[in-house]
Image (cartoon, rainbow, N blue to C red; front, side, top):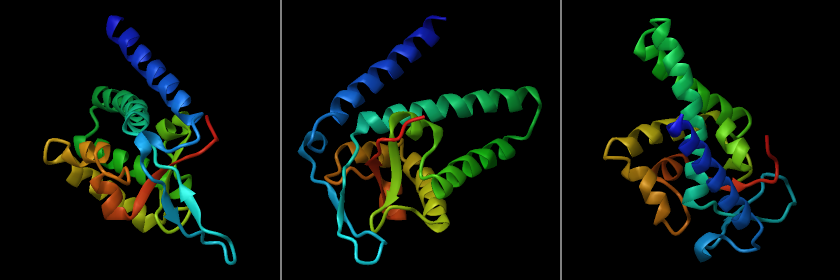
Length: 171
């Protein structure tokens, strides 16, 4: 119960911090936005507003809690660990390729977009999930990298040619 309360407070605080940051007119930590060409013919280039590390972390935490619940359920149903891993891959690739957002990103109002346009392809979603694995192997260094990267990209973003953009839509 104490752990659940601490997790809820962490999520609530992260969301409040993110909302405060969202109301600012500048990108976080003075980071420049990323200029992205729109895929619409004749449209003007737009600037992708880079999302801070804590906003992305809160979204990842929400997704982790959701996937942990499914993993525990699968454990009780004695489903193979490989199938649990495969479900995680399908979860991320499916949400990214169809909506650009996992439920955690939806809750935080952020979206995965391509550097060259608004939507990512199935190929980019697959590359991004492979990048997650690569980012995890050296003690999560690929994820920590995004906190120091000038463009706010982790290794998985660089591999897939993606970034995280602020969106006004919420769950």
